Image (tube, rainbow, N blue to C red):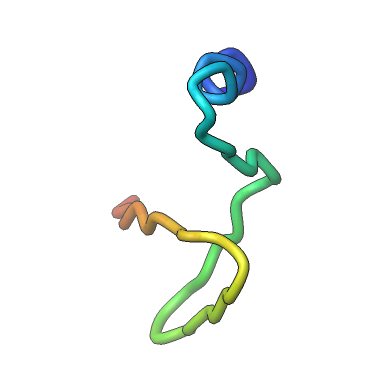
Length: 44
């Protein structure tokens, strides 16, 4: 992800690559300083 962030940075797009947060169940996270993505995972 670091190389991808560098490429975006050269185009003026800032990306925060801090470690991901894992939520379980109906947890909710609020963030006012950055746009987030959510990747749902299923596992056995």
